[in-house]
Length: 254
Length: 234
Image 1: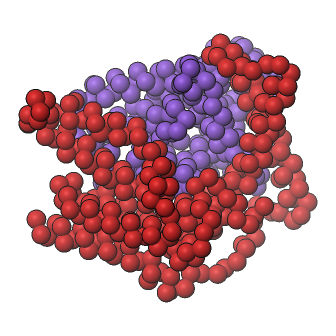
Image 2 (image 1 turned 180 degrees about the vertical axis):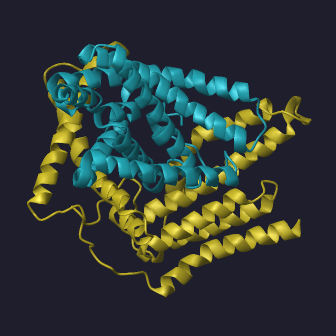
Image 3 (image 1 turned 90 degrees about the horizontal axis):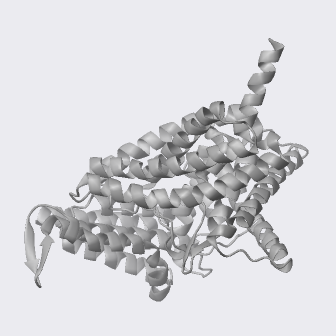
C-alpha cells in the first residue's frame, strides 16, 4: 500500500527528473511559480523564456506535449474569464476589427492566461514525475507540520478504498433496478453519501484501534531520514535560477 | 472556485490575484490552520491523524462522485459544510485544507501561489460561516433529523456564497485587472447560489441519513447533548 501508489496524473517513466528527490522538485516548482507571478505582465518575452524553460524540463522528464496539453484544459474556466476581460475591463479603450476593447482588460487577459498556463504546466510536470508517497515524503522533509503530512497520508491511503466503497454501493443500487439520473432523484445519491460517511468514520475508528494495538501513541515512525544530496539541489536549482535570470534581464532591459 | 463540470474542476489559479495579496493570505491561512490544529486536538486528541485522514478521504471521494443535474451538466458536492456538521469546525477546516493542498500538488487544481487564497475562502471562510449558522440555527430549529436537514441546507447555501465573496474581497485588494466590483460580486454570488442550492439539497439528505442511523456521530448534535448532560449534573 505504501509503495508507489499511483495517482491519475503520475506518468510512470524513468528520467533524470523522476529520479530527483521530491523536496527538491517541490521547492523548484514553488520558486518558479512565485517568480512567474511577480513578473510584470508587460514583459512579454520573459514569459516566452519561461515557457522554453518548462519545455526543456518536459523533454528531460520525457513528458509528451500532447499529454500536457490535454491535462492543461483544467484551466479552461480561467481562459474563458480571460476572454471576457477585454470587453468588461475599464479605462482606455482601443478599436480592433470594429470591437471596442479595454487596454487594461487585454493586459489582464494576457496576465491570467500566461501566468495561469505556466503555473498549471509547472504543477503538471511536478505531478507527472512524483508519486503520491514521494510527494508526502517531500513535504515532510521540507518541515511541513507532521499533522498535515499524517492526515494527507491517511487520506491518500484510504481514498481508493472509499472510492471502491462508493462504486460497490452504486453497483448494488443498479443491480436492484434503480438508476437515479435526474435532479429530483438526488435523494438516493445523497443517502449513499451518508452511508459512505458512516463507513469512512467507522473505518477510521477501526484503523485507529488497530494502530493503538500496534503501539501507536500519536506519532508515526519516520520511514527514513535520507536527505537529497547537494548535487540534486544544484540540478533542480537550475530552473528557478534560470527563471530569475530571465526575470532580471527583462526588468533591467526595459 | 467554480466547480460545475467534471473536466474543469477549478480553484483560483496563478495570476488572478497579485503576489503581495496572495502572500498576505498565505500567512493568514497558515496562522489560522495552526489554530485549527490545536483546537482539533481537543476534539480528537491522538485519534486526530487517522480520523481526520478518513474524513478528508471522504470529502475527496465525494468530490469525485458526479451527479447529473441536467443532460450534459453534472455537478458534485464540495462537502465543506457537510464536514463541519459531521466532524466539527476545527477538524472540518483541517480536512478541507488538506484536500485543497493535495488537489493543488497532485492534480494541478488551483495555483501554488493561490493556495493561501483558496484555503482562506473554502477551508476557513466557508466552514466558519457554515458552522456559525449551524450553531445558531440549531438553537431555534428542532434538534432532530428534519431540523438538522433544514440547517444543513441553509448553512450550505450561505457557506458557498460566503466563500465566493472571499474571492471578491481578495480580487478587490489585489485583482490584476480593473473590473467593476459589484459586477464581479454579483456574478460570483449568482453562480454560487445555484451551486449552493445543489450542495445544500445533497448535504441535507446526507446529514439526515447519518442523524437517523448514528446520531452520536453528528458533531453538531453532540454539542447540545453534552451541554444538556452537564446541566443535569450541575
